[in-house]
Image 1: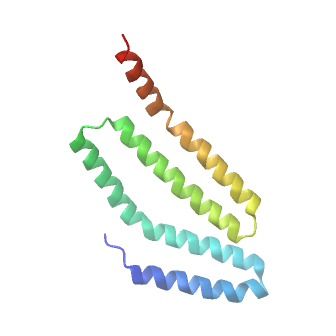
Image 2: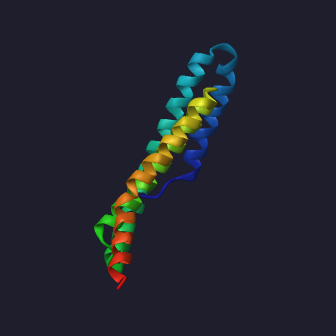
Image 3: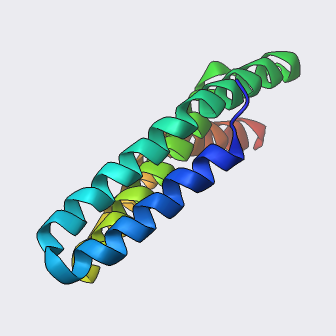
Length: 130
């Protein structure tokens, strides 16, 4: 599935124009429109993300990587993308403090997701010691 960049641009520009008009009259609706636009744009990216994940799986199988490593990579990528989107939506809503906390929680979640890989590295290093 190829993404039409023109469709993406049209959706983004339409949202920006509507948001510019709504922010003066109804700021509460502007936040809702911003969330809706972010959701539509995220849905727009799901097809290419699926292709990317399939490509990563094929590359990992070709390289002989353990499923554990691929799972962690994909999980970390997903956490980073979702937290970035949530953080940007919070900033758009004028909630910079909440956005900062979302970023912090995302970093903690990424570190937690990476624990199995860190454990595997430590076990490998310990097994190499005499």
